[in-house]
Image 1: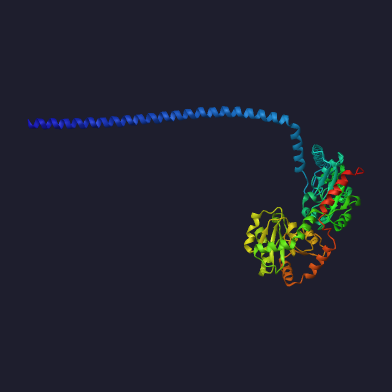
Image 2: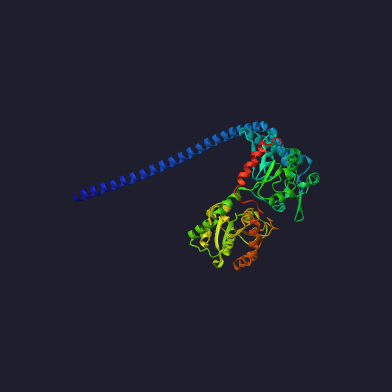
Length: 479
């Protein structure tokens, strides 16, 4: 009995193990079959999907390409006249010979006609603007041939509007030439350039052994064809305006030397003179308030420095400075060296205060006021090749003109009262002389010239005279 029970238990155990083993086998086999099935089906589905997708993309790609070609063909057909001209122009530029401005006469005349149409459009636009505003007088602050001002003057004359030029700045012919020196479009190189130079010699200027044209040959030809070329293009503000209103007899003498017609010229004074006159009346009070606000004593010269804009990237000559920060830092440190002067700085209109605010860490003060209102309170004006130097001369202030970027310009270079400098050594030397009182004779000469009215009348009536001259011009029917 006992053995029977044992055998049965053993058999049951074997049977259970067998079933468990078979179940596991079956489960594993089923799982494997299922996984294989899913993998195979997955691969089939992916291959099928890829094939469908590829076919879809191929079909759509062909459709898009056909559609694009149709659109492109239609575009070229519609714009054929434009593209044919553009292709011809590209061929002309491609085959331009080295060292020449124009490949042939056809290219030159194409560009001349282009500029002629451009100037005619500018004239038409100016006429529309002046007529829409029912203008009686057109006033320009500058009239230079490389702007469109000549077109505006012609437009005004076409519709009977009087014109006046009130020049706000000055530059010499050398200044204009320096900006065009070594530029291919201004060099006389081709036969067309030579022909234009022979026909219009007033457009030619020799500078540093280069013969230069102020504008390109096609532009010059177009301007002369339309009869809007100035009498003396290389003279700054050579204008066809009915009147040129000048600030002084000295300025009038300069314009007379540039072939300006006497009938054009009228000495009225300039608005800046009225600003200087107004600041002069309260100069002592304003100076005291300015010095008190900074806690300075009035026991040393007050220098006003004009912060020059950053133009280092424009210069391809050797400079003493590698960047704008270094240049301004050196310039400022020289002014404040040994605390010999009280120094205030004013901003050029194109200089942002945030660019130069770091200079105040050196002990100078940056005043954000109009330069003309500050010149009256200073003793010496330090500047970099600025037309505002004549403001200081007119106010009887010595000018130290440090040519930081070595433009070599000649603003009033023949006049006593402006000290021109081009190097660090000279700048430091001049400031030493100023501190030691060695420049007092120069300061006295400038003061005496200003008192004698050499730079115009400082009676506060320049604005009124300008207004009167403009009204007289409008009512003058003989022009």
